[in-house]
Picture 1 (spheres, one colour):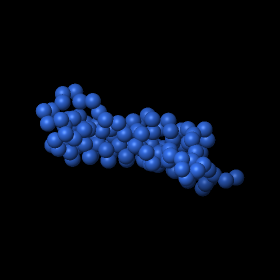
Picture 2 (tube, one colour):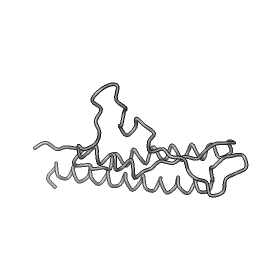
Picture 3 (tube, helix red, strand yellow):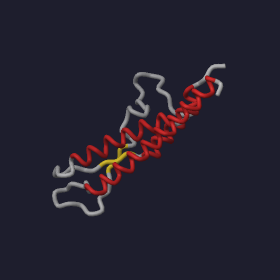
Picture 4 (cartoon, one colour):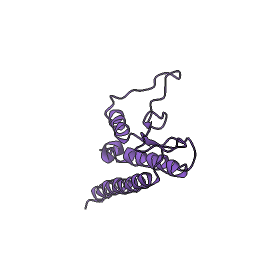
Length: 132
């Protein structure tokens, strides 16, 4: 009987990719905290996971022609949203450095948790293959 890694690993590989993309966006926000007019952005993690689940279930959209839009997870920035500032600055920058650092650290912890889940899945598969 063949093992399907997509079924065995679940949504965890997509969660890691989504956390990685969010880390890039948050790091970009922190790097531009002093750039006049820079607008802070963030990723809609829930939308990314819903799309990953739809793609895994087979009910997601598929690209059947080269003229169609790319709806893959990395193809569009549909999950990339602008953040509404709590206290906008005079120069138009919407980055709050302390909140960005907090979000970045939370995302790093969530990334680590997703990695641990994925590691436990591989460990379980390894035990199943070796008969333990």
